[in-house]
Amino acid sequence: MSQSNVWTHKGTFILAAVGSAVGLGNLWRFPYVVGENGGGAFILVYALTVLLVGLPILMAETLIGRHGRQSPIMSMIALTKSHNTSKIWQVIGWMGALAALLILSFYSVIAGWSVHFGIQQFSGSMQGASHEAIATVLDNLLASPVLLLVYHTLFMVASAIIVGLGVHRGLEKGLRIIMPLLLVMLLLVLAYGAVYGEMGQAASYLFSFNLSALSLQGWIAAMGQAFFSLSLGLGAIMAYGAYMPARESISKSAATIALADTGVALVAGLAIFALVFAAQLDPASGPGLMFISLPIAFSAFPAGALFGGVFFILVFFAALSSSISLIEPVAAFLVERFRLSRLQAVCAMAATAWLLGILTVLSFNVMAEGTIFHTLFKRSAFDSIDFLATNILLPVGGVLIALFAGWALSRAEVERELGTNARWFLLWQFAVRYVAPTAVLFVFLKGLGFTSGDVWPLVVALGFMASFVAGRSLWLKADS
Ligand code: TRP
Image (cartoon, rainbow, N blue to C red; front, top):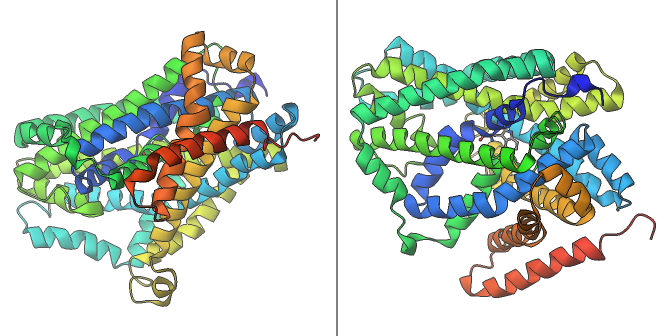
C-alpha cells in the first residue's frame, strides 16, 4: 500500500476510531437501553463486557487491519493465504461488508430524524407546548415517508461526500473539524443538564450498582450494545487500522478509544437522565427517550430551544462521524478489487444502502404493524435488519476476528503490532481465544431459549473447547 494511505497526523487513528464509536449508539441507544435494563446494574455489566470482550476484540481488529494494510476483505484474503489457513475465515470480510450495508441503511434514516428535531427545536415551536403535542412531533415525522426519505437522503449524501473526498481531504480533515465540535457541544449539554436537571438523581440512577437487579437479560443487551457502540465486528476499525502508522501503539490506542466511547455514553446518559428526572419523566420509556422525553424536558427549561437544537446538531455530527466508518471499508474494497474511482465506489455503497434504507423508512408507516411484511416476519423490516446485523452479524464477526487474531497470527507478529509486554500479551491472548468466544456463545444460547442460569459452567466448558477446536484442528489448514 502506498504511503499516501497512512493517516497524516499522529493520533488520527484514535480520532477516527472515536468518531466511529461515538454516535447514535451512545446518545440515542445507550441511555434508553440503560433505562430499559434498570440503570446501574446494567452499567456494571456493560463496563465488564467492554473490558473483557470489547477491548480485546478492538485490539484484534486494529491489529489485523494494520497487518493487512488493505480493506478488510482484501486483508483477510491476503492473511488467509499468507498464514495458510482455510478460506473460511475470509467470511470475516464479506460478512462485515454485508453488516456495514445493513447498519448504514437504517442508521442513516434514524440520524435523519435528528435534522428534523434540530429544526423543530431551533424554531422554538416546542417551548411551552404540552407533553402530548411534543410527543406527536415524532409520530408525525414517522407517519410521513416523504419527510423521512428527504432526511435519509440528506444524511446519506453528507456521509458520501466526506468519504468521497478521500482518506486525507475527506475523513481526516472532516474528523479534525467534527470531533472537537462534538466535545464542545457535549460539554454544553452537560452543563445545561447540571444547571436545570437533577444531576444527583441521575448519578445515583447510573452508578448505584444494585447487584440483585443484575439480570441475564441485561447481559444480552450489554453484549449487543458493546459491539454496536465500539463499532466492532464488521471491519470498520480494521479499515481505519490499515491507515495507522506502524509506530503507534495499538494497545494504548484501543484503551483510549474504549474509555472515550464509554465516557461519552456516561456523560450523555448523565445529562439526559438529569433532564428526564427533572421533568419527572420515565427513564424506561424505550427508543423514544431521545426523541420524545428529551424534547419535553428541554421545553420545560429556559433556553431549551437553543440547547435542544445544539443537542440535535450534536447527534447529527456524531452520527456522521460514525456513518463514514460504515462506508469506508466497503468503498476501499471496491477501489482495490474493481479499480473503481473512489467516487464511484462511495456512490455504489451509499446508493445501495440508501435503497435498502427505504425499507426502514416504510417500516414506520406503509409497512407498519398489521401489514403483510409484519405478519410474515413477526417484526418490522427495520427491526429485522437491526436484529440480523446488530445481534447476529456483529457478535459472530467479532468472535471470528478474535479467533483469527488469537490463533492464526504468530506470537511474534502480534507482539510487534500490539506493542505490549509478555504479561499483557498473554492476557489479551486468553481474552480473544477463550473469554470473548465463550461470552458470545453464552449470549447466543440464551437467545435460543436456554433460559436457565444454571447451565453456565457447561457453557463455559463448551466455549473453551469450541474455541480450542476452531483454533487448532478445525483450523482446516489450506494444504491439508
Ligand atoms: N458505533 C456507532 C455508534 O455507536 C455505530 C457504528 C459505526 C458501528 N460504525 C460501526 C457499529 C461499525 C458497528 C460496526 O453509533
